[in-house]
View 1 (spheres, helix red, strand yellow):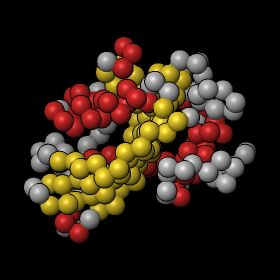
View 2 (tube, helix red, strand yellow):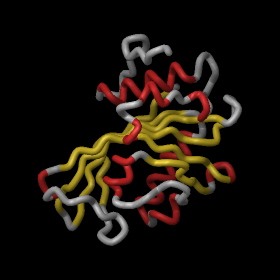
View 3 (cartoon, rainbow, N blue to C red):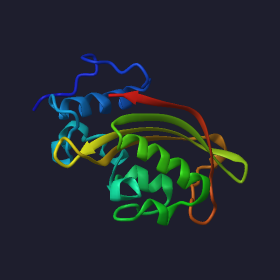
View 4 (spheres, rainbow, N blue to C red):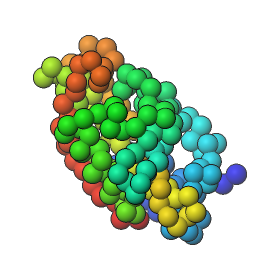
Length: 181
């Protein structure tokens, strides 16, 4: 088994060691092709990070997006199961529009990195750092998204999980970067 080498091609936009490692793995998985496919993902590369990953598929050229799977950390921090659910069934309004714009950017062949603060009832509850990368069915046609998310609870969270469905969260994007791949 090869390892993912962060030093081989250090990403300039991703300033977190875990996110840099994930990006290095993605670069290795594509093995000289434009994009890796889902079957190229080696879970052994990410064994300690699997709870933070999520996969989406693009439906009808990006008209809709469906979560294929979401790790335990992702589910716990969102407060609900994502697997096999459509993005537009889970979110609406500005949150949906923002997520769809990021996901549509990724299926055109770009990566995306963002840092956001989540607020609930005007109190900060979470800092969210997220990396999105394209996946392809045949290494040529992008039809999916590989996502990796890190969550840091802020003092205002009072240790309670965020409840997106029953107590909506407002999101402030602190930084967002397109990654040329």
